[in-house]
View 1 (cartoon, rainbow, N blue to C red):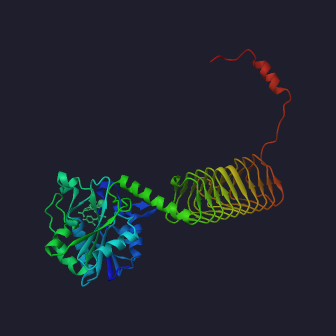
View 2: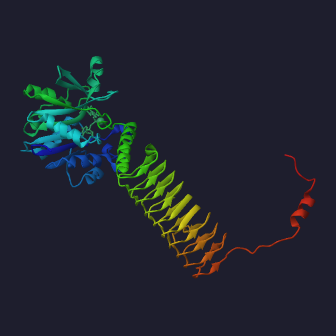
View 3: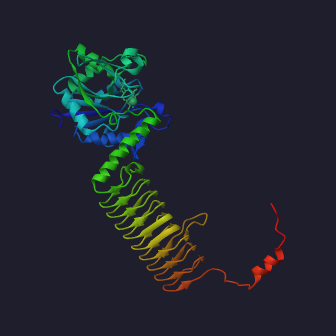
Length: 446
Ligand code: UD1
Ligand code: CA
């Protein structure tokens, strides 16, 4: 990629005050993965010698999340220039290219970064710009005759400069041999009293180095994250990318924009997903599965040929085997549903091992919790669990058994037998007619 050796510095020390959240800004997740890790995935593909992440003091989660990459601590949050300064100790003697990226701009594409590095070439530095419909909040690239003169921060910009729609995305590529000298020259005489990395073009110009500008036309890939609304916009961009990847692998999404993926979702070819489906972490779906509308999945495995939904909730530890049918308003947790079995309507199955070709009828549930502990239910092959059955765990229903509708089962059921646990029917002939006669004429008017 880069002709020269490459080091990458990622600035991530900011607290992200504008997010109004406890955790460091770059630890906020997109499709369940912290934004810093999305950026690292792209950065790693450039095969740099080293990636250095600048963190703030007391950010142990961030340090853990970026491992095995190096971290340096910026002791005081005094600006993006201060952050790069903190990384200089890790760059001593390095005279290749240094790519500087903002941790809160996680969706920048690989090819865009390659162009930025190429734009620098043998020169001193390059900056990645983008024309934005709404440039508010971003630094502006002030150019004359197509040559960048300086970058002006939004807070320091004049009314005329604010009209400029070409913004600084925050990504720079700098000559490693000159970086330290230029960074040391950054001052803090500006609206925020901070050391701005964006002073580099002017400092470089004094050193007779021109700043090259590389442009991207896709403002979604370079959107920064400063507030919760930005996080939502980034999530939208990322989800769209994930949907396209899924469709490219041969999955049918009937209404893609209503399906939400987790970064680790795996879906096999020939699977169809109807509208309004949510994937939490750890979901793996095989080939030729049908997911009907309005389902919610977490840590679940679904084997080929199964049909799930509409309106099914599959919670962590669920394994749906081949050709199983899970229908509407069914919740399953920490259970295996054996090949060809059916749990078609209004059921709860928890902490259960269910064999093959079993039918678990409408309204039946496993009673897996006694108020203190969870208990296991074991159901064999070819079993028929009738409607509105309560299986009070721990309990075992052996192969081929029948459980009568409405039963509350508290004892194990042997193979091929019938278990009925309900009161006997009592018929009082003529009772209803006699009751009506007794009550006739006494109807209360409301
Ligand atoms: C920055 C740029 C602005 C650009 C915008 C693009 C500067 C001075 N401004 O503004 O020109 O248009 O990004 O999104 O560079 N950080 C540190 N240490 C600090 C301050 C920040 O590591 O002391 C990190 C933050 O964690 C963040 C990144 O640098 O990941 C950007 O900081 P932020 O404060 O969000 O800069 P912006 O105001 O968005
Ligand atoms: Ca920002």
